[in-house]
Length: 336
Image (cartoon, rainbow, N blue to C red; front, top):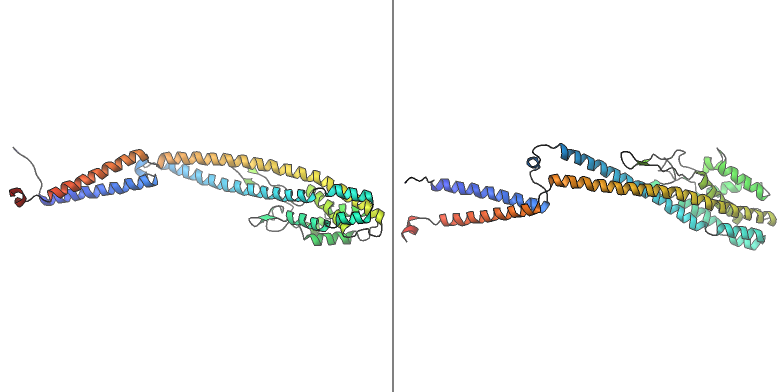
């Protein structure tokens, strides 16, 4: 009977080679089970990297859109928050001014308008708000506050109306200062850009435009109402109680009209917020779908990997046991 055997040295090398291979497999499977990713992607995709490269590109592009959408949402939310603050500052002021003007009582008028200057300053500060080092009402000039200091604006208005002796005269001057092309507001009040900032890119085919600036006509109406009430509080027409009362009524009407203007702008921004929220949800869903597709290519089956890991572990333990027994084979052991 013939049989083939190998020498002790060859057997040692064979066992060592098997041991190294099993240890390598054990380490690979343990890594795959822990990371959830295939360790040899080239083998898993048969060398065809086109699908995974395409998915990685799409994911990077989608991440950029998600970042841009987040920035757009933060931008318009900051605008909405500023306008909400202005709305709370405006609350009840128009009606109070009308009531005070109708009473024609100097003390009531003074009491009503005593904090008008502070309210005007608060409105200007709200419109000068910024987020991520960008002013949200400055158009393209996001590095520049949109409005000059409230004290400077009010001082310019006081100088402009100094010669006026009637409420309608002051109203006309203030209207011209805020509304005329090349007037005081455009030359020294508004510091931002006349052009709106570039649209935010939300997806390959979708953008969000942020058109609102502090030079918007509705915003000017809001500023005008507060400025008129501030002029009353600062003593405009003090020498003529009747005209001062009339100016308080005009200021009240302007503030009430500004409430409608404010409602209109907030509605416009609300529409933009809804549009951006919809785009954000769509982008998140698309990113999740892309990640699932990538996972199907690169991820391992955890159950199958765990079974293979246990199999290799058992094989390695068996090899150690066999090696240990073979190492005890000798003539002395055989004769014992």
